[in-house]
Length: 354
Image (cartoon, rainbow, N blue to C red; front, side):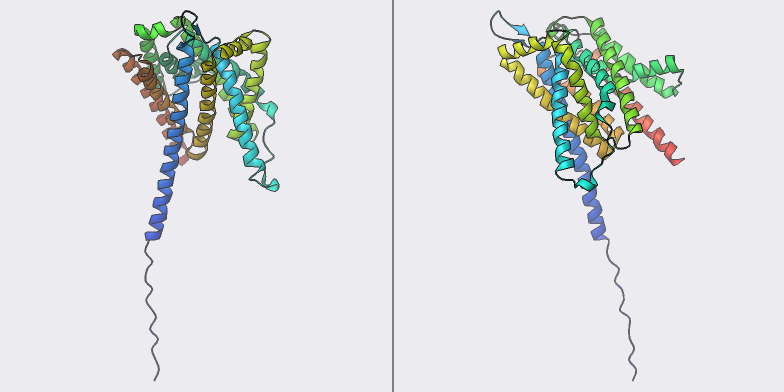
């Protein structure tokens, strides 16, 4: 008698495993983003507090109190700290954990970064110097309005036309900065060493113009050298910035000598500078990691909102209560910046689809 072979029914596999894997990947993605946000916020908000301390604190006791001289030199100390930090990471990542045959040898030469390092030397120096003339929240807000000089120069020099919405966003930012500058609380102005709003905002504008050239030069390096990485750019940009500061601080002026003497007389200032530099080095690392992992839009949103919280932290830390008109100005600026970033992202996304 012939036996009938009954084929076993295949039991469909459940997608529980796939769903669990997808859930874990999404959770890890969210955790990484949260880590980047917390790291960036923590590093730069803390750095901003140390920067404000160095610009407003009177060191010493009794009648011999002195303010920290030459705030612009802070960028030099930060540059060397970031260079050493990035150089050490390059050695660790490329020469310890990566085999010789797998190393990327197409990195740009270090001399490719000297132009960007030159403007990166003078640009932030103007921003630091502005703290002698305007309060820290005003400086942060003014430096956030980077789109203003970019659009102005693009229109005047290159006859470039922008979408109507971009002009609306630019108007919001301009109105916000103007409104903030028009109102000032007496307490915050008294903490500034030499109150002079026009000079302070002019220095911030100069900072933005020079930073704009730095960004253009960085983009040119990335296009010319395909082997360019964020870590190498961080390393050699800061190296050249620090190199250009040496003659400025020790040859053409006595700024370096005076700062060292000040830190010798008031060790608290030296600790504040060290803390400022460590925060800057850690913050740059989180920014570069955010760009690599989540893209430039996410990094823009993180850094832009971080500046708002820097202003809030300054108000809470220093007791520099802002007027309601100034809070309205802050909301104008950051609404314009965030709307512009989202608009550009959606526009690029639409162009890729077509």
